[in-house]
Image (cartoon, rainbow, N blue to C red; front, side):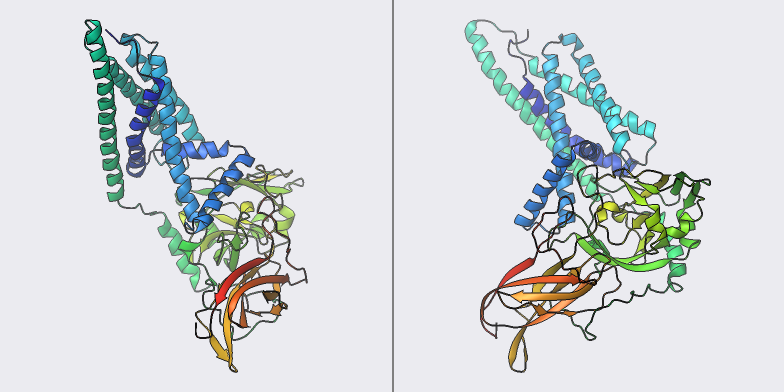
Length: 558
């Protein structure tokens, strides 16, 4: 005989979450060992693709605010970790919801049909998850049919397990008199608590074991990089560095950066990464091709080795910045890009007269439009396949990404797979979500350091070096000025930039006085345009404003 009080929706949600917990480890193991979809991240990515732009950018703002407020580390890598934690939380929530729904349905189901209902509901959830995964997953290497079967099996097993747990919770001793029934009810409550504790212990054990196995597995190596590395090595000696274009500004020949200024070239592992997926797509270089279709009389398909070996390589130092970078934020980096001029490639396509734009699509579902006229008129626009003499890292867009001078990173697709020649411009991925149509990089200057621990003396005057960077896209920097407190703006020394498309390092030797001081910096572009001093947030066109820092200096010996 079953009790009048059956397991509730809340009990189902708790058990659903507990059962989902070891599934997180199972998904990770299946991904690492068998190349099956990592559903945890697929669910997160699908939600992100289908969330309104205003809401998703509000979440990004909150995340960045928290990273800055709590000093959690470099913004892009910390944000990616937070996104992955959110993915785990989202999957646990989905499991809890499914558990609650299933327990609610089982309350109205005869005992003999519970297992069938559980399997059917779980399989239905598997169908939904299969559709979600097929829409967004770019990392699974297993056959799609095997992936679908895996997801369906997990879903059906989840439903069957919850149905079994529901039935176990409803099994009670035959009641007798009223006193016995009360005793039985009390015992049942204790049994349910004990049952939940047992489930929790079992799932925790399975989760720890699964996570441990994941940690023990060696990191996978991308063996398809070997042929790319050989091609890059073959051209290394023959390829000169792209010299900086002539820049009409005065640079200090013996420039020495102020201690604490960021490196002029960003180490590859430190280069910022912002993209739309919880983890980057996995692309096999040997199987990858770049397809060119649309308004072309001769559709093309290129292998990566063709792009590397058959075209003159170009090296260029580039500073790339995210449009969501705040004033003095760390979503900006500089490295050496290697690739081929896109305007040379276009000439092979025999474009039809109405062709006006390229619609560039990435493996992660990102897309953006680029003007053909702009490409034809700018030799600096590259299809890049290497950074710092190495094949692009997976997280940075392997095997191919575009570089367009003067624009924020939101306009520059990575993991490029397709180029469609079209007549009309349309909104790209981030433009559709409310960000800038043009995304031209704003001019900005930043104080990296007030080197209070590196005081020197010049003509008996104590000097504190102050330094940082200035950037104006590809428009160049002619002057940087520093103000201390409410004093006059004083010119800083500038270092010759690595190219016309990189930031400029600056230094100002401040004849200091003890006390608390406020330092400000501003810059002027090559054509005389001053940076915007009014404070504007990052959305939709990029941040503007004067950067300032406060420092306290006690004595010349400090």
